[in-house]
Each structure stands twice: as C-alpha cells, then as structure tokens.
Amino acid sequence: MVVDHHQSHLKIIRSALSTLVYPLQYVVNLPIQATEWVSVSLVTHNKLLNENDRLKREHLLLSSKLQRFEILESENRRLRELLESSFRLNDKVLVAELIAVELQPFRRQIIINKGQREGAYDGQPIVDAAGIMGQIIHVTPFSSTVLLVTDPNHALPVQVNRNGLRAIAVGTGQEDKLLLENLPNNSDIRVGDLIISSGLGRRFPSGYPVGQIEQISRDPGEAFAKVVIKPSAQLSKSREVLMVWPYENIEQVENEPEEMAVK
Image (cartoon, one colour):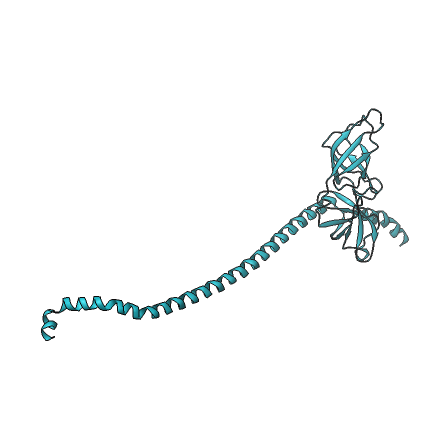
C-alpha cells in the first residue's frame, strides 16, 4: 500500500474494481434519485397549477376591466356627441337615459328616467346627437314616455333644407322609415335631400335634422308623391337623449315687459 501510494502500481486494479462496483452503486442510489425526482415533479406540477389558476383569475379580472373601459369610452363618446348637439340647439337641455322600450308591433315608444321633477311636460321634444327622436306624451314624477317620430301616430312639420319646401313627416311603424306627406308630384325634391324641422307649431326646434330622402315615387294618377325618409336619429341605438325646452328663453323675454308693467 505504501509502494502503491508513492508509485500507483495498483491504479489499474482500482479502476477495474470501481467499474465493477458502479452498477451496484447506481442501483443503490436509484430509489433516492427517484424519490427526489418525484418530489420535484410534484412540487413543480402544483406550482404550475397554482400559477395557472392565478393567471386565469388575473385574465378574467383584466378582461372585465377592459370591457368596463370600453363601455365607459363608448358612453363618453355618446355624451360628447350630445354635448356638441346641445351647443347647436342654443336652448335649455337636459340629458336623460332610456330605461325601457315599447315592444308591441308598430308602436315606437321609449321611457326615459326624467319626469315632472326635472320639468318635463307633454309635447316636449326629445333629440339625440344626430336628429329629432320624438316627443313626450306622458309624464310621471320620475319618468316620461316618449313617442318616437317613426310611430304611426306621430307627425312632424318639416321642410327641405335645400329649398325650404314645407311638408309633414309621419311615422310608418318601422324603425328606419318616415313618409313625407302633402308634396305634389312636381315638387322640387331629390334623393339625398336633408329634411329638417320647420319650427311651425312652436313644439320642435327649427332647423334640426329629421332625416334624408331615400326614395321618391311619382304616380301620374296621384296628386302627391310618395317620399320615403331615413331618420337621422339613432332610434334603435341611442342610450342617452336630450330633453329640450326650445322656446323657454323666448317666453321669458316676451313676459318681461308684462312683469315690469305689473311692478
């Protein structure tokens, strides 16, 4: 052993013995290695499952927040459009929200969340960012029923924006169609003409969009042409509307001299 320690005469023998013993060492260590592998695998598997659950919860939460942000963005856009519309009106206005829609066939009515408390009255015009929607027909303390311009019972004094030709726009019961009445066959009207409110009757604000002429039918045997209008207002899409007090400022000015005379 001393000679081998200094001159390594038994190196080959030791190497051969190590080779013979290695399989036995491998077999002895195999259960320990297997136990460690299974333990690491289980820990890694549980960790992945927990992380996967956490990521699913975060994804669901972020998706919910994203949807809410999209809803808020859409609502903000609609309110900006209503605000711009209110500047065009130059009248007292109030934003209201839809809370119900009439579902009966050929009836076009909605219910808004403003009523007598806010000063709503029968016949008050209702508009959205694109055009006239209709008028209030029934008021309660907390809500109001609005008759849309497309309802068969609704009629609106209008005029052709291009030449001032006056007519009456009546509802058809369809959400995307109005009819112009009292226009002779030889009237100067064209497809695409903008139809606006005339202001006659002192109910609707004048000069506000009602729709565009979509179709014209002239029958030589009839005295009047059949004119179809596509409404400008988003009657089936609007969630917020404007309540308008179109002649309040005028009435206040007209009443001022009387009040001063009484004083």
